[in-house]
Structures are given as structure tokens and as C-alpha cells.
Length: 83
Image (tube, rainbow, N blue to C red; front, side, top):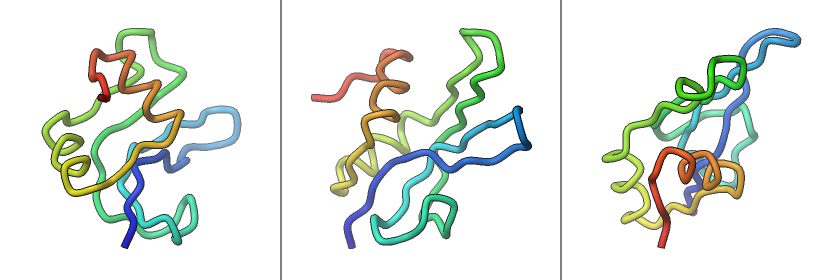
């Protein structure tokens, strides 16, 4: 199993929000997830857009999960740097 940390789209038309989830690469974007590690709400103010559990993210990365480019940028905005 190859896990990936990526966004899962939720919300309504013109009011999207996303969950930052750990999901198997073979599953669909909005399919079954392994774990939810945070949320991204692009409509909120700048300092409240991204919220995530850093310990869960570190745990999944240590288990071999990789982050998508978009998630990597979001996490880096909140001072969570990848090596």
C-alpha cells in the first residue's frame, strides 16, 4: 500500500473546503480515506485557512506517506517544513 497525503474536496458550489487526508494512491480523490489530518478552507481569512495535526502528519510521513505538491505548499505555509 502506498499512502499519499492529499486534499479531499467537500462543500457546495462556489463554497468549497477541503480535508487534508491520508489515502491510498489507488483510491479516488473523494473516496475512502485512511486518516484525516487537517482541513483547508480557502474562503476563510489568511491565518485560519489551514489547520492540521502536525503529530499525525509526522507519523504518516515516518510510515512512508508522501504529500502531494498542493498539500506540501499548504503545510509549508504553516511552518511545517519537509526535508
